[in-house]
Image 1: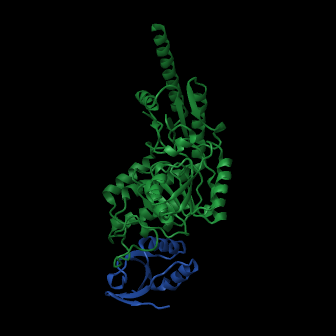
Image 2 (image 1 turned 135 degrees about the vertical axis):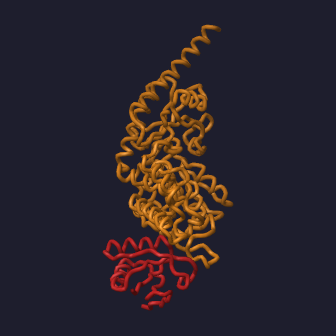
Length: 84
Length: 387
């Protein structure tokens, strides 16, 4: 299954994103950002399934939520950055 | 024991506070560090606490910073806003948690708005005059911890916005009883303890950070974010939260905030004011007692100071303690407030109530005060007869 990882600047921001998405009816999970895509060091990401990704991004953009980076993963530790 | 020292810390807490802290000690680990269930639960508790505070005080949760007490928060706020050589306006009722950090910054000139007790209009008038002369910042307590005097913070905030001067509010005695609206006030910082009117455990506090100032760090260390960087993150709350959080404290604080939100601050204030007024009226009727109270308590919270003529305030407090009643005496870490009110030499005895005190306790306290005065009169009379 394909997942998207929305990198957030901090745990608190990831928690805020999760709340925003859940209120919009989109299931979201907070994970420690995989080290290979963590960039500036440790961080947290919000993980959403592929079919809800576009809706999630639309919701976050609407509230002007600051998104660091977005990565896609089909599993097996491989991540590719999603460029807007 | 009848506890009448809630201005120092609330002793009686909702049962949920104790349960939450106890649960956290055994079941919650450090938030933002691990990816396992106990960390995730701790993260949820911390964020829920920020959310609950954000809702109560009208501020986004990421601008709610956990501190260890109000003093910690005030130090961050003052050192973020005030530079060496600045001129800062303060009220005449500030606590040492404000005056000492200001004093520690080189060449800061403090202008004190010295208005008499319970004269909020005069405070405003003098503040305006001082603001017109030009200042770098205003630091103001919402409620005097010695006298319970409620300063007109809404209007002060409005003046600060008008003159474009950053405002730091010490909400140590008002959080949980008076409305605090960070959004409306436009304050740069509002500092508060978690362990007084918010009924959380000691060792907790909140610093509400307005959008206008980038806070300076007091501590640098691990934040669980941007860890490759040698500098503290430039975003909140991480910038001001280095090190491991006090999760048992935060868990308890969350329950305390929920208690206050459920009860409603207006109801808590009405209850506390009612008890304070009862005490003030009772003490005022006693010969030999000087009470510092506003008429009908209109600009006063549930904090009341008094003196017994000819008796050291510490002796009064000690005698009251022997009757099973806890009050505080002395200068209450606020010599400036005493200086303004003219009580610096003698100090005062202070009683302060919480949502958990009741009328019966106040009446018991007043009865004991009557007994004290009666015993003093008897002793004096015996002394005179023996001469």
